[in-house]
Length: 339
Image: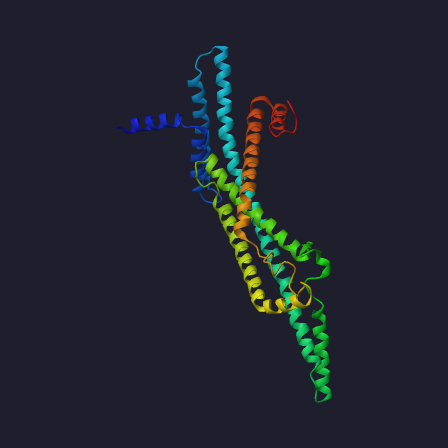
């Protein structure tokens, strides 16, 4: 087959590409470029987009040829639908990457910080426990001279600054109901909930990306390198922080279990444990969080798709009919006004 025949065959194939197939070509091509793109790469993308619009317009002409009014109307309708579909997919690529870059930077850092702070709070509780025991021991020490006594008093004053810090169970943390207790949210509970919310938000964005890739781009990766690397880094940081936190809770459980059991027998169920700690309620289960994020991710992907369609429709109608018509179109699409 001659070179001209090959070129003609490729041109014919391009004329049959759907808006999705053109969008996938745009995506695959642009993902291989540098960040930021060079002038040469940018010009190549510009030509690819121009070829796509021309091809889709040609498809509409072939579907409804002729100059009869009904053919012209149908041709314009198909041309507009194909153009909007392709433009919406390009918009969607931009929206997904922008959203992921922002959320990975904010939610990932915030979640890791929340977990680290939470661990510090609980560590203070453990140190306070040690400070109280040390105080009891130092109070019983008999000093041999005035200098030793002064040092002993200094140590007691220093330890006193930490002995009142305690997250232990209190009567006000729960309400007894027969053999059960109704727990009220504590400061630690709120910290854990906040951290879980941020982690779920991160997982939701990850799940939304997977939905977008499968539904709109036949599984092709949709994230560019900065967004992809940012999401991976944020998730790893959060998961590492959670594993460290859970490991610390496990260590506390092994160290204090005998003491909690002894206190449980003497204090009607209340111990020096943090409320919910003995039951494992403070542990963050990443698998459960990721599972809960799947539904949210689907809703998020749906929202991104709707937004991309609205913005693409706005762009095309503004080009064809002006800003007033475009404003009406996006308001109808987004549900801000009724027809």
